[in-house]
Image 1 (cartoon, rainbow, N blue to C red):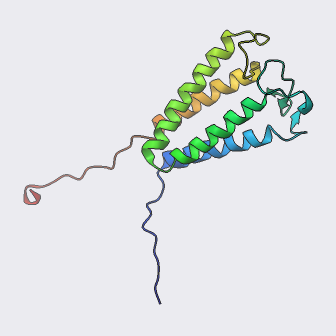
Image 2 (cartoon, helix red, strand yellow; image 1 turned 45 degrees about the vertical axis):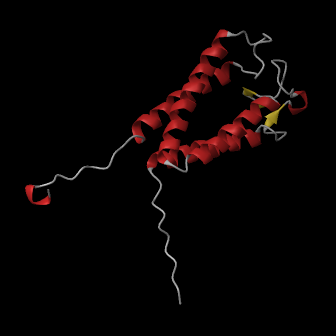
Image 3 (cartoon, rainbow, N blue to C red; image 1 turned 120 degrees about the horizontal axis):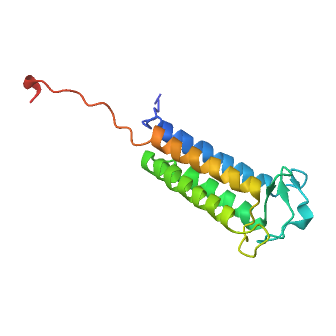
Length: 155
């Protein structure tokens, strides 16, 4: 009888955080396509500030917006396979969300430049996500194992 043991190392905390963020983004992307959870579903546009659909009746969404959430989620799960990838996903992804926050504050919500679309609730959620993702990257990533001190006999 042969016993198989896994030699897979346990995921680092930064990998778990990236996986969690990836799952959350996937869930949000899927929920954005479900009538009832997304209010005014029939008024959803592909990409336009005129999309009247709102996830949970609060966050303005479009087909493009939902697809971006799905892509972000898949990227999180893919990059979470390594600690370095997870760190980069959280750090760069958080920075992208902060840029998106500034963009949302800068363009008028009724402007053609607001093609994603974004409303005030989206803007502040993007700020919180950006800070959270960067915070997770900095708190959990780039940790190195403790070094052991070598004595003269070890050299």
